[in-house]
Image (tube, rainbow, N blue to C red):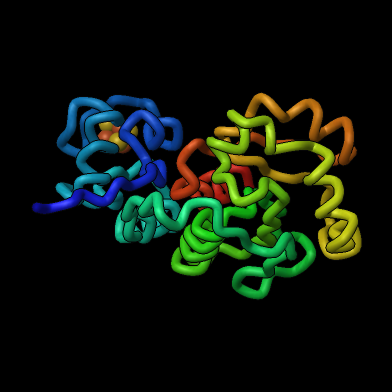
Length: 207
Ligand code: SF4
């Protein structure tokens, strides 16, 4: 008998997610009638980002590197494994690099680190205490808390390591934006739901 391993979602980008980063001109120059259809084709490797002349070469190359990333679901049997809440400097960032907040689920941290590393994105990644819950589950269980983000920032002396008082939370945690802003006194930007699009978010917002 074959036992199917149950797997958890890693939120690969959808065409709707990607469309948020495309020009929304629907000019058809790429050979597709709409930006959304072009985005779907890019994600399925049926065309290359460079086919849209409205995208900068840097943006196109970054998108191409995101498409190549593995997006393998996570087996449920490793859920809840925890990573220390220690600031991770990815790709030798300087003080102007963005600060990204995530959960302390080991696989979430591993995947986010890999996304940033493989796309050449400089950033500080801060896992915060969610007791091993991934971001979606942590938000659902009220474990993605402003107080834990504040604590992790204090313990890691974040204010001394980053130049700007801005942090980026995952799109899945949007509901916590105001409480995080009030407690940390940092401006809070809500990143994409799919962590795979975080490098595009950083580039688009000049972070
Ligand atoms: S060329 Fe670019 S702007 Fe025009 S439809 Fe294609 S993706 Fe959209």
